[in-house]
Amino acid sequence: MDAFPAPAFLSREVKRGDYWFLNLSPSIGTDLEVVCGGREVCGGDYRIDRPGFRYSSLEFVASGQGRVNLNGKWEPLLPGTVFTYGPGIAHRIEGEATSPMVKYFVDFLGTDSTALTAKAFPDGGPWVVSSAAWIQRLFEDLKAAADTLSDSRGPVCVLVVRQLFALLADRSQSAPHESSHLNQRFLKLKAQLGELALRGLSLAEAARECGVSPSYLGRLFRLFDQESPHRYLVRCRMAFAASLLLDPQLLVKEVAALAGYDDQYHFSRTFKAFYGQPPEGFRKLRS
Image 1 (cartoon, helix red, strand yellow):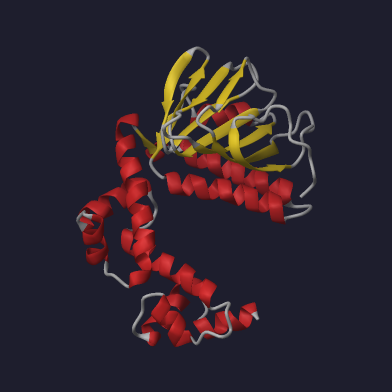
Image 2: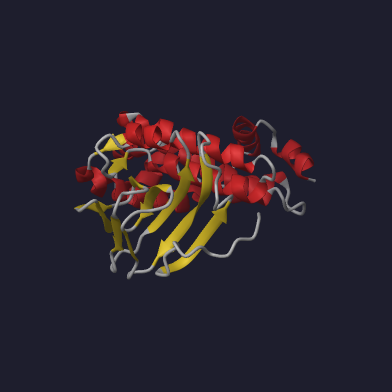
C-alpha cells in the first residue's frame, strides 16, 4: 500500500485508526473513484464538526453509540447504523463517552455518487441495517483489497462500494431504530456463541448457556444475519480448525478434538463441506 501522511480531515479523537488510502486527488469526471477508508475505534470525546466535505462518504457504526447532525437534524447512532454526507452537507458527529463507537467509513467521488447515495438514503438521513454483519464484512473486504492488491485494487474497491450501495438500496435490509436494542442483544449473543463454539455443544446446549431458547436465537439470526445460529457455530469451529491445521505437529484427530469433535470422520466431512478440501488436502495446499 502506498504511504500517505494522515490527512487533516481525520479526527484526532480516535483511540486507534486502521486506514487505507488509494488516491486523495481523484480524477474529475470519472463514474466512481474510491479515495480512502478505514476503521476507527473512537474515544469517548470523539467529535467531527464540518460545514461540508470534499468527498462523498459512507459510514457504518459497528458498535457503541453516538449521534449525528446532518443539516441541522440530530439522529442517534446505534450499532448497525449507516449514514452518508458529502460536499455541501453540514455534519457533526459525536461519540457517547460511556459507549465509544467503532465505525467504518469509505470516501469516494464521481458522477455516480449522487445517484448511489440517493437510492440508499432517499430521505438523506441515517438508518439501521438488519444485516449488520454483512455490511461489516464488505467494509473489511474494502480494506483487504486496498492492503493486498496492487494495480487492481482501485477497480476492486469500486466494485465493493457499488455492492455496498446495491445492498443498502434494498430497503428490506432496513430495521427501525426501535429494534436497535435487539441488534445489540444479537451482537452480545453472537459473541457468546463464538466463545462456546469450541466446546462441542449442540445448538440447544449453547442456547441454554446463553440463557435463551434455540427458537429465539433463530429469530435474531434471521433478522440481523445471513446464516443460521447452527451454521455460525460450525463455521467458528471450522475456522479454528483451519488455523490449527497450519501446525504440522498436530494430528488431524487432535485438531478435531480441539475443535469440539469426538468423531474424526464427521469432522473431516464437515471441514470439506465448508472449504472444499478435507483436512489433509487443506494441509497440502498450505504446505
